[in-house]
View 1 (cartoon, rainbow, N blue to C red):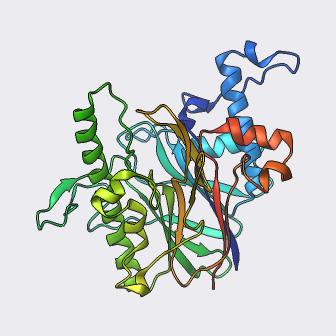
View 2 (cartoon, rainbow, N blue to C red; view 1 turned 90 degrees about the horizontal axis):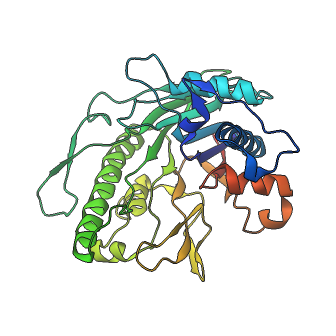
Length: 345
């Protein structure tokens, strides 16, 4: 069975809803973009996101920064996404949405899947749960520290609908940002950078524990999301001797448990890393650079046919896409979607 698995950070998607209802006020064709009001801007964002999703033509989509849910259940990301797809016409396939644990913030981790092909269930583990505090030794000094996921990773079981055969288990994550957004001096900046890096490592170590458990139990595993890190992408990886992605990939001393990156290791160029799924301005140098922080990692029993980033600035998409699609990718979100074409038994 061939499947396209995609991940897309939709950048504060909660803003395209008011009280759980999608904003739908498209600007008149004659109205210049500079005169659009806020409702018209959010409507256009939705329209652009939908164009990107149609281009992806996915079977399973991991949604990062989805709409927010309320813990009392009066508003859910699932209901909002289903209504949003109906409102803006993502109806050519029988797409359904689902979500995991409700986060402590205003953004949720969700999935959208083709309900005619697949059964997708939220199946969180009860022990060592992602929505509870956990202990890990981030510095490898035999001292465990307590951490918690701000956005508990979404755990899902993917089954083929025709025979209900389990195909693989999947984790969607939005790991801790490494960014420092406060006004601080260099000493405080260094301290916060180290703490943020350890928090990022802790979250990925906790996820890696789940990966190990599932693979040892005989499951195939796919991990995706905005990990806020890449292989060899900054100074602190050298200082700690590791990166968050390499933690998720696994140890060379346990080759049967290692995951494969669908996108491969990015290469450093004049403007940053390639392939890239987002870009940032450096806090200190103010230089703009590209980064690969959206990832798809798969276990050995899942056959990878192709992995790519829909980056309109990079070949072949810079020349192979229409102007409208490139605009949708550039302005729909501050991230570009990634995908992997895989085969499962």
